[in-house]
Length: 170
Ligand SMILES: [Mg+2]
Image (cartoon, rainbow, N blue to C red; front, side, top):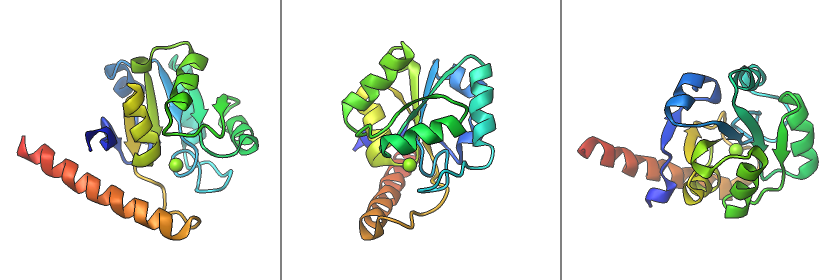
């Protein structure tokens, strides 16, 4: 179960500061697309996301788009995010996605943060790969995907309840 727990949690990507990331020992950032940097299933960036990416680059971080979306969509959204590197159709949570990301950035796993809104893809894969896992609250519930997404979000809720119960016991 603990592999599904994010190391850090934020309300949105724009809440994460360069200082936060430095404290985590992070040099590179892999960001998810849907509900993390864009409105779900669109090319519309979330408010402040483009500026946030630019700021992090200026702060010296490497930023890469790591998404399970198709390559064409990954490519076009990477341009919107300021022409950053991207890996589309990445097959998160499989390890290969994360290995490709860290290699593209020339960094070690523990120097890379994966920021995403799904425990079963972004966070699970990051933890398995030894990366710093950062969960952000999804911008909105998915309109696509129907029942399977609903079930997954319900499960995420239960995992967080369990995780929080564990935290308060300490
Ligand atoms: Mg997402």
